[in-house]
Image (cartoon, rainbow, N blue to C red; front, side, top):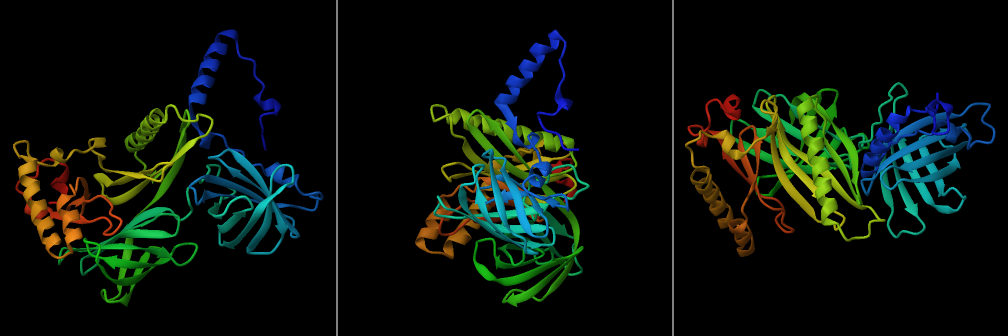
Length: 448
């Protein structure tokens, strides 16, 4: 049954004492507004777009994001002759209409507003339950790419994340290899491949080569961003096959051990809109922690924007780069890109046992001087790195603080600021070098 705000199901006259409570709740809702609560799949509205719909109209709903990371819902109908549909942009709160000739597996439509004025064109293709399309607007120089996934008919919850956005890791194979992969939902793949026998870690970065992203080609780098070669990754069911493409290693076959989806939400506070995507775990304390982080950070952004034009939303985007998730913690980086296209980075190491973000001091015995322990180890690695590069590279390495730290299976990783030339550099301090100082009953006791 399709409901809307005009239906009588919503008519209820509360007793007088509830009036002021309702007004208070309404006021709060205007201050902190979660767009995901305002969802209407517009099934009947799409049916009504067809003049003769008595012979049957097939309706499908898709959800995902566009190039600007706006949350998109597409309600698409066809009568085997024509496509007609409604595009809702939940982030900008705008609605447009599409119409075109029905062609199986292909979507080619014009885009109009509610008055019938042509705004642009949409060209896309279907692959299984996925739709990838490019939108070209008449009033914009650049187009927008949308990546959507069909909402199952039996599913009432809105899947508003990019369809391929997930994180998975493998079991360790017989020759001690493990892989950690994050698909960002925009065709970009990143992760690590670790060899536990030789204590070698490779950084992986590349792109999907098909729409479902079960095949990707990635470049292989060492921790200092020196390219070593390229491999192809094929994922089928719970199997991961790595094919040797150029100068890396022989082929590997691994088994997926853990696979996690992402959650996406949008929070609006005053004139600041923050779209966030983060790893979705079945842990209430973790979900509360990340949601509180999103709300508090967006309130901070709103305060920083005081004095700007309040009639226009200032949009920011938060994403989570997962370094490692174990039974005891999740570790990684949170990246927030503002409306000025500048990105702020912060590392996090959230403990499922302590229900809080860890401080580095939590890892060691109380009498340990963290600075005296860690600084010489970092300095030694920085010196070795700097000796292998140019004068500019040496200056960058020796002057960067490497202040971001995350927990990896083999050690504590300290990373630099992102550099336009040399990217992000990593220094890995193996646990075996600091095992005598690690707190015996602390968070790392399980990895020693």
